[in-house]
Length: 562
Image (cartoon, rainbow, N blue to C red):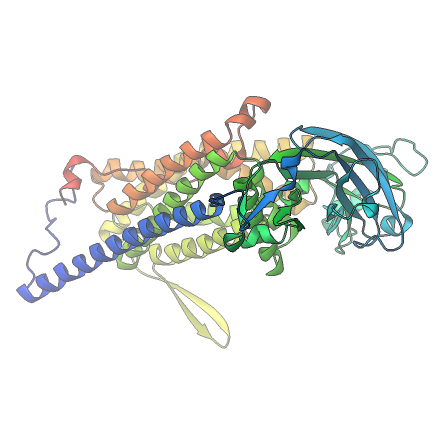
């Protein structure tokens, strides 16, 4: 395979010595910049490892019997009781109700209980409800024990309800429910057809109260002896101590795991919800894990203070809750390297297209398809109300793909009287030849692509349910992108075959993106292995990527010498 035709010359051939030195200097600066980025990345990883070590490791007191140490109350093996109350206010003013108690409570014994909680009228009318958790001496009430420890957890949260999905043809609801009389609602009895046309516009955008169906509790079971001068600040707010002679003794470290409160576990509260189930889970926890959990919980809370919604925070919670700590550490390194590959691929891709003046040997249809597919995926994520953590990068990627289309088709935009005018550049003979091959390949591809996409969209319209017609359209488009995106490798393959050359492709960018793509597939396979084993369904975000051929086509051996 040729590398560019008989007239191909080296990049510096025919240049003056001054220009050759300038070109060499620019290449050196690019190499130095990449080296600097990789060096900063290594420093960042090492610094993060040191910080994480400082979080999970706590230096114990050198002399446990000394006056400078704080010893655990649990070392005396006291008889304890766990009591949980509900109240309308976090300070228990206005009354409290006992919902569960564990007599002869053993901090080392794991358990899970399901209790039914009666909801006050104020809570049913879009109000709140709190849980008061006490660990105290067995046989007496918490208020009679001066050495009790307690925490407050909110059992309700506010969220905008998700619009119901309906059949756009029959108007049937997504699932059958019970009306106020306890009778089964008939399909389509909620005037769902009207919502289909308006995109569920009848749904209110006001947040409503939702019930948190899980309450996860932890107590540090380690008989750890703290040193007064080196008491960690994150543990200090959970530590309650008292003087016992010359020694200082700290009470059990009680912790409410807020990271376990996931959006999937929420249940909407309405005026008829008089009683709802609550799953109370308890497990012992190590001091290192407690400190790590406190830091992660504070980080999620800080994001919510900056405007992140409950759903945005839930994406981050899933990283920690659904993952083993050791695997989480591995995930950090994987994510860090993925970020590095993203940056290098982004830099090489932008550099290539910034200098690109001709589309000889490049499939403009593949570039246009990549732009279209990226925008479709962005609109799909927007329709699914995806977290900003995913939505923002997808939006930035869409803007970059639009810029690449502008470069590929030589589009110039002129503004006249506030209206844009688009002017397309002219193609030379070599570009026309490439465009002919590209158009011919798309013609053959359309015979297979269009019937499959139309058939898939029709099947989804009949057998699946959506929030609106727009939701059906964007879902059908994104299914086509994910399912048949690999077919758009063919136009670039056809152009390469006809021209007998791949010298016009961005070699450096393809190497990085190809390795990045392989890296992403391996991570996705590992991360979702459990889901695939249980459901037999491969998650959509792990399916075949929609990337066109330039992401995968590697140069021949002759091209590598360029």
